[in-house]
Length: 359
Image (cartoon, rainbow, N blue to C red; front, side, top):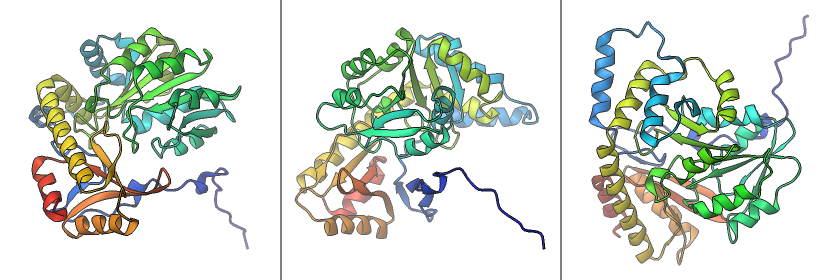
């Protein structure tokens, strides 16, 4: 009898927990999804017209633009960048591991905050590197600088953070950069940057320095999560090696025209972001008045902790919302305790929340 054996994954692969989003059930029709930080305001109406126009052309049999160059040029023009210093790809979730696999050497270290995006652990494993985490509490700059070692190859900062909701001021970001060795790559993950007052300070840092990359996405403020579009900006010496290993056609034809249409409609972006920020502030105030602890809110979500309440009370909030057709994300371990993360929806979505919770 011939002995058969299955291929064995690399050591550590099966020890990485599944991302919580992968465990979420499919919502039933009529459910309000406030558990995935999607933008319920939706994209610019021009996006749908651009998709219809692309379909009418009947050219889906042809490859899209090489390197999505038309979008690279449009992004560069909008933000005042050099188009050769911009690359696009199918979302930050593809860009970030690609960046790490390009610049982080095997058995080296990637440094980030311990309340950062959970999938950074997966990305570090893909790069065969160790992920070293430090607290964002207290002096966030010193926490990073104190953890640097000769093996540190990259510092990865989600700014604003998810799920922390925290924003590191540009002065602190620059202080970190100024104290890094020149061979350490600083990566700013700015998925939620449009929802805060950070502006384009990170892009300016990437333009001025030779070891900084900024990663942004169209999934959040531009409401194109279903199209998977992300982009990166940095010095040409960082972009050149990335260009060698990125896909020749990083975006589908429909993703490409969607992103171009969304970028062109800045009025829609500003209106939806402004409305969400007002609703976010209102949500935080309502929970705080009811005795809950609400952390920093610099993304399109809030994080609710017990405050004067108990863990059982927190569980009842989750259950009450779920039973009423509103899904939020439980955080089993957030700074030492359970918490709930709630995406901010439209006014009508949030009205359902307040009706269910009576706050």
